[in-house]
Amino acid sequence: MGENVVDMVIKLGQEVDVVIEKSEIDKGHRVNSTNKSKPKPIIVRLTSNLKKTELLEALREKTKAGYSLTAESLGVASKEVVFVNHHQTVEVKKIHYHVRKLRPNHIHRTGCYEDGVIWVQHKDDSSSYVRNLTDLRTLCAKFKIPLVFEREV
Image (cartoon, rainbow, N blue to C red):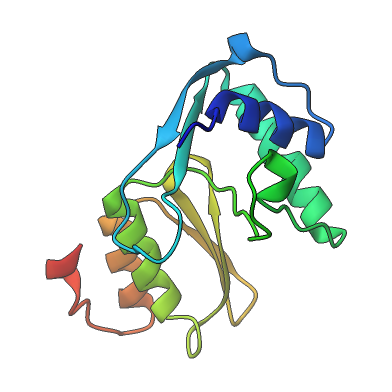
């Protein structure tokens, strides 16, 4: 492809006013995806969790203000919107999927935080965290919902 992932990450930082040096990027590359109609995702490991948090928070704040990151702003010839997220393990992705399925009837909002912890705001304004399958079982028990999809997690 001839693209330079390191340069893209540095440009991403510039877009949200976070200085990222080449030495702060441990590695970055594209990964295979099951969705062949979209470009392959890029994963990047920074040498510092503090820098990763700073970058994600700056991007979140700009997004709240109406900013939309595009591939073009990272030096790629495309107008597609780019999404930047924490990397999630397959297990955490499945747990998050099942938590979101509870959304319309039992929970109000969800958010995913660092290290795969999922924050859940309930309809009664209380909140809880789902860190693993045990927490998911507890959440389902609170609403008296059988965890029928446990085999999938």
